Structure formats: C-alpha cells, structure tokens
Image 1: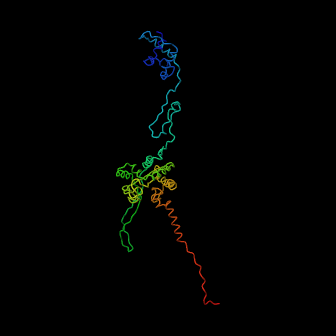
Image 2 (image 1 turned 90 degrees about the vertical axis):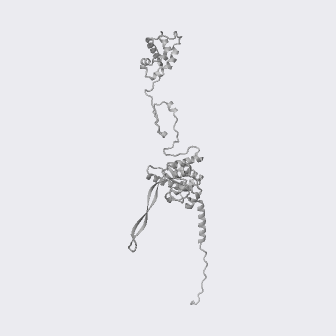
Length: 374
C-alpha cells in the first residue's frame, strides 16, 4: 500500500482513533501536546494541496505497522509549524468579593483579545460604606425613601440618658437634731433603643420603612433628603436614629421629650401619620463610640452652617442636639425664630421704641424775684 496515500486517507484515525500516542512519539521534537490539538485541521488542508484523493480500493484495507510508521513520518513532514505559545496558560482567579474593585488583576501575559472581552469596571462605584443615588431618584419618592431608610439602617440606635436616683440621708438641722431628708443625684447611662421602632411598627401593622420613613411629611422628607445627601457627599456619613413617632412610640421614648401626643415627630395633635416634621440625626463615621461622637458634633456644626440652604435646622441646639426640623415650621420658629418671627420682632422693636421715646420738654419761665434786694 502507498504510505503517502494512506496518510491522507487515514489521518483522522491516527489522531482520534488511538494513533495519537504514536503520533506524539514521532513528533516529540516539534513541541508539546498542544501542537497535536492544532495538527488535524492543518494537516487536512496541506494534504489536500499536496495529493489529490484517490478512490479507495477496498472498503476494509489491511494496514500493517510499517505503513503506520511511514504515514506518521509523512504527517510530521507536511505539518505547518504552529506559533509558539507559553508553556503554561495564565489563570485568572476571581474570588467571590463584595467589592468589584477587589477582583484580582490579570497578569500581563493575558492576550489583548481576552482583555478586550472583559467589561471595564464602572467609574462611579461608591467607596465602602458610601450611599449614592443613581438615575432619576432625585424626583422619585420611593427612591428618596430608600435613601433615608439606608441611612436609618446603618445607624446604631444607642445614646446616653440621664438617670435620676433618689436616696435618703440623715443630717443635722439648725437646732442640732438629726433629721432624714431625701436627696437626688443624676448620672448618664448608656441606652439601647433599637427595639422601640420595630415594636411601634408591629403595633401599627406596618413595615419598618413605611412606619419610620413613610410617616414623615413629604415636603420635610424632601428637604431632609437633600441635606443628608449633601452631608454624605461631604464625607460626614450621616445617619438617622429616629424619624416618625406615633403616640405609643413617643410614650416609650427616654430622656428629653414632649408629651406623647404633642411630639413634632408625628404626635396625634400634630397631625399623626404622614405629618412628622422632625428627625434625629448623628454621624456613623468612626470605629469607636468616642470617634463617632467627634464626627457627630462636626455633623451638627455643619447643619448649623449649611442646613438653612436646604430648609432644615436644629431648633433646640444643645438642649436636644440631634433633633432637626424645617426652619419654616412652627417648632423651629418658636424656638429659634425665622422669617415670620423676624418680621414680628421688628414690629415689636419699633413699637417699643415709639413708646420709650421721651416727650419734648417745655421751656421753664423765669420766676419773679419778689423781695429781692436791689
């Protein structure tokens, strides 16, 4: 049998049907096993160009070992040299990371085509802990609620409250007798009020976001959103510890507070649900409580300086530092004044000035000097 003819007709058998081991042994000097992967199609093209296929004389030709060896040598001769490749293909490992920026970079040996197929990372990825609004959320109430809710969720619900203790002691009175009197002392103790809003929401039959955020008045909620978004962009990392409160939630509040139905957070006498005009804000920046206290004071000072640009202010200042509300609302005007209060104060000052203006003095006539010596 003609070995050249057999090589053309039987190369698939040599490559895929068990002749792969013989072939690799014969062409070991041409490269490693990856050359074999590209050998079959290349040989087919070259073989067609060199020798035209002839009709098969028999359906089951007899092939001996010498023919196989000679055919393998022929296949090695007509094989087109492949482009050399690296001995080991690089492996790109992508771990299950939460931050896309933490994906391991590719090694320089990765081909340009593979690099082009990978989508570039978006440029507007927020840093860890950063909350941003993307798209048309500036005008969508649902997105505003989600932003404020994210600030509420990330904020620890811890503070300190003043605890008053009464105790009885015996002292001597002015007469020297021992008498028993009651004295009081106060101290600041840590307070965890994480459970209070969930309890109030469950009592009202609402989800947490609908209760805490949805209970605020819409115009105030929009002002609060713009202000806290600006504070977030300034790197202050604001957080919300309390927003809407109904009468029950106000009744279980601790520390300085209004009557249960008169809270501007949403008491029934102020309009109830949907009419909350107050929120408590702190900073979440810092790993420890002392660090967060420093950043919280910086946030409050920032609100005092910039809050009026957004229509929000702190009506009580140091008496209730976290408490904020609209500067055109009744609470802020009554405590700090505003446009309405400024006008009324000017009228009062003018009226007082007119009342205190002294009347014109009349000239005093000279008295006659009766009995005066001349």
